[in-house]
Length: 513
Image 1 (cartoon, one colour):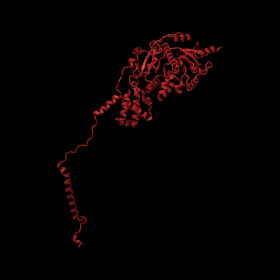
Image 2: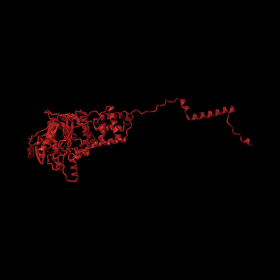
Image 3: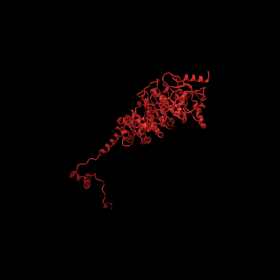
Image 4: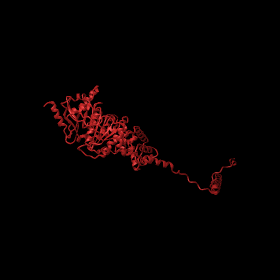
């Protein structure tokens, strides 16, 4: 058996799966595309997470786009974090050019341009369906993580939530939380200490500064009503395809706290809302995070811990998370070890450090007799990648050098008019883009303080004495008191003298002679 035939049989054996699959390309050997060596992704293992990595310009984002298209066709909803702003083109049909024609001739496939059902979401003032959440929904634990508070400060936050729950004060947006925080540190300090224990003014001041820092990154836009329901991320379009929700976050690269806040809330909400489903034929939702290195470089420790925890647990909910980054070493080792699918585009070796990274990356892939992995990573062309994944039994598939299929949708951004049309036609726009300002803690505490200022408590005064009579006035006169006292002393001395009980009297001067 020659090397080519052995390669074809190894690929067919390793990439043949039960159930539905997505074709992503064909294997290559010696620089030649082998159309018979088809590479498939099994839907039944897509909830085991994955990584698409490679240097800028290698085609990793387009691989992301192509996989999302296949998932949508298979009725699997997807959420895309579009950090660069170049994934929105999935809502428009692609166009044929010479490069695409040549690629599909090599793959022996037909290229069919197609549009896909898309909702555009936003955390900011960009056009799209507004995503919000209330402070109450976060709860004291997540708020403490977001603000990076210590145990003592976290205890104050828990006390604030308890106070608001007991007094039926909804915490909806940040102005509610700030108002309660100010009340706790001033007018209401005695009230809360009587019921919940001592409160440190230093702690409330620190928490307030952290909240203001969060506000400076635009968090006021995120906290509020109407809260976004994560079930709306898992919708099927009228034609049976999975909805693709694209979160437009290209304007918050310099606002890591805001993005961390959203990610923490969304992952926690998905985990709490979705039931355990175990191993299923296809996932309920796949989350794609483009340019993930921006998240891991700037993310808080709380977000990293949360991602690590969710990666380990959420696959049993039928949800997969896929990262796209320039260097696989950008992903923490604890997260990297949980990723089942790995698609590695070209890496460049310009420095000794680059060569060391490539060597480490090559060691993360299964051994193969068909390639020298360390060398081929630097030789991959645009739209080519090394691929391996876990099969149904959890065993890695053979490492394959793959010519990837191209997206069938537009490999470019949407125009302003196209964005306007998508937002206007979305069923979620009317549901979430209305401004709601419910009666909450801010209004309730403001009214309470205004009422207290308008109706101050009565000041206690000494009761007035009744008017004195003429006899009492005479008796209380100091001159009269002195006369009475002198007369009384004289009478007493006279009585004592007549009884022989008087004191010793002075002898006259005559008695001394």
